[in-house]
Structures are given as C-alpha cells and as structure tokens.
Length: 124
Image (cartoon, rainbow, N blue to C red):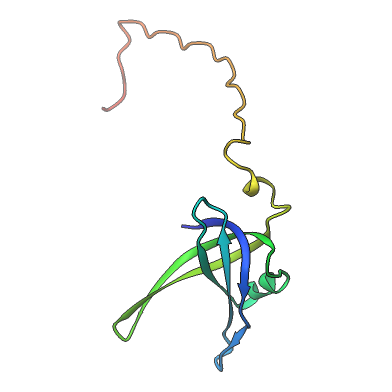
C-alpha cells in the first residue's frame, strides 16, 4: 500500500553510505494542513538522486510506503519515499478535492423487465 503527502522541504540530511554498499538520505517536510507537522522520510539507493535535485523550502509531493522491522527486541518504522516530485508541476496530485469536477453520467436506457415465466439460471 502506498501513500502520498504534500508539503514543503524543511531539512535535507547528508547522504549516509554504509560498508555494504547501501546508501540512504533522510529529509523532512512540513505539511500544509491546518496543524502542520514535520514528517521525516527516507530515500534509499537511487531514490536519493530525486532528493538531491531539490532544496529546502521547495514544495513537494512525496509518495511513500510504510516499512516496519524488529531489531534486538525493538521495533522501528520508516517512511520509505519511492518518489519525490516538485509540487509546482505535479498535475493531478496537486489538485485539491474541490477542484476536481465529476463529468455527468451518460443517459442509459432502462433494462427490459424479465418475463414472469423466465426462470433464473443463476446458482444462487
């Protein structure tokens, strides 16, 4: 299951490189809700390049998964960012629910009524 969050980049941390070849970069966005929150995300491997192209103060849309794990009896949760887009030109993701309009439904002719002597061949 994936999630999406919009906000403004508050802080971008330095990339962390590990001896195994794994690397990651953390960043924090501030949401634009009624009660703004600072939320920390992690971008791993080649996803760090998406974060490197952005700067603090940029509007972004972050698409992410929630990852959980246990280590030495402790439980950890990470918000794994798999796509970080600039919020200025992100198309439908930036549209507010009020801006989305529903197209009118087409007129559909009514279905003909089944004759009384027709027997249903459905098994239920």
